[in-house]
Length: 449
Ligand SMILES: Nc1nc2c(ncn2[C@@H]2O[C@H](COP(=O)(O)OP(=O)(O)OP(=O)(O)O)[C@@H](O)[C@H]2O)c(=O)[nH]1
Ligand SMILES: [Mg+2]
Image (cartoon, rainbow, N blue to C red; front, top):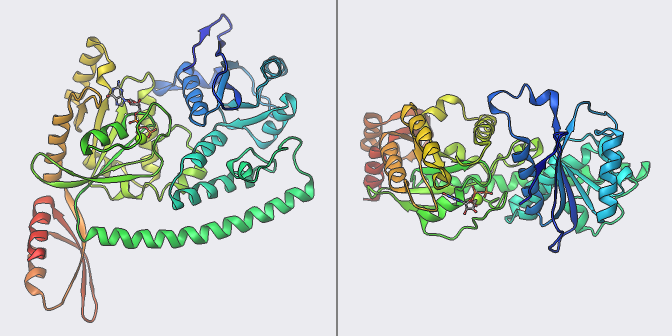
C-alpha cells in the first residue's frame, strides 16, 4: 500500500518502485479545501481516500508508480486542475512512462479529454475505475450483462471514448485524440442498439430469477444478508460461519456476485446466509441501478447484518454510505431499525482504550451492535446467538397457494399469522401471510405431512 508524507503545502507524495505486470499508473486524490471544511462529522481523511483509490487501482492490477493528494482551491471547468498542477503531474507521467492517471473525483467529459491531451495518457475518474473493476470481476452471465449496461450508459454520456473493458475486448488502441464527429454518431447508434438489446435480455434473466426465488420461498428458510463497505470482512465472516472458501482478500471488491449457503444456528434452526457485493462511497449511479438486482436478496432478507471494519479511520463515513445505499435500494429506517444488526468487525486491530470506547457505545445503543473479529473468532458465538434470538422474534412473509377445500390450513393461517393479501381464483386461493419464525417452522412441518 502507498506511503505518504505530508509536506508544508498539504500535498502528500509517495513513490513506489514500479513492480508487477500491469500498466503503470498515477493516482491523485483531489482535496478541495472549501468542501472539506464543511464535511461535518463524517468527513473523510484525504490520506484514507488516497489509500482507497490506490486500492481500486491495485484491484485491477495497475502498478501504482506514484500517488498524491493534491490540494485544490479553485476548480477549473475545462481541465479540473490548474495549469501548474497539470504541468507538474505531466512531468511525472512522462518521466515514469505512466499509461493511466486515476483522478479520485467525477470528471466532466471535457475535463477528461483535456487532461488526456495534456498528459498524453489515459485518464480515468472514480466512476471509470469502479466500472473497470466491476467489468473484470463480474462472473455470472447476469453480472456481466449488468456491468456492460452500466458501462455503455457511462460511455454514452461521454462523447469521448473511454478506456473500458469493452474497448479492450475489441482490442481497441488509439483512444487518444477522440473519434471524429461521424464516428461518434456511429458509436452512439451502436451503443443505443446494444443498450436496448441488453435491457431486453436482462428482463428475461430477471424473470427467470424471479421464478427461482418463488420456488425457494416454498422452502422458506429465513435469509440473513451480510452487507457493508468493501473490505469490511463480509466474505471472511461468511466463510467462518459456513465453513466455505469464498474468495476473501485484502482487495477492494473481492466479491461481486452474491453467494448463498445454508447455515445451522445454535438452536438448530436452519437459515440462509448471503454474502454480497461491497459498497463504496460515490458508487456510480449507473451501477447502483444495475446492481439493484444483485442486491435484491437483501430486500427480502429477514436480517441484514451490516458488517463494519471498525478499525478503519473513516468507518463512520463508510457507515453513512452504506445506509444511504440501503435507502436507495428501498429499505427505509423503520425496516432497518427492525431488521438490522451491526457487526463491528476487526476488533483485533483495536487497542484496549479504543475497544473500551466502542464497547460503551455498543452497550448504549438501542439497536443490536455486536463486536467481533472474523480472524480471531472473538464474538462469533454471541453473533450467532443474537441472530437466533432475532429470528425467533421476527416475522417472515410467505406466499401460499391453497386448494379452496383446505379449510383447516386456511383457518390455521388466519389464526396464527397475519394475512396480508388474499386472491381468490377458481380452484385456488393465493395468500400472502406474515408468520413468526416459530409458526413458520410449524407450518413447514404441517406441510411436510
Ligand atoms: N485483522 C482482521 N482482518 C480481517 C478481519 N476480517 C476480515 N479481515 C481481512 O479484511 C480483508 C477483507 O476481507 P473480505 O472478507 O474479503 O472483505 P469483504 O467485506 O468481503 O470485501 P469485498 O468483497 O471487497 O466487499 C481480508 O484481508 C481479511 O483477511 C478481522 O476480523 N480482523
Ligand atoms: Mg467479499
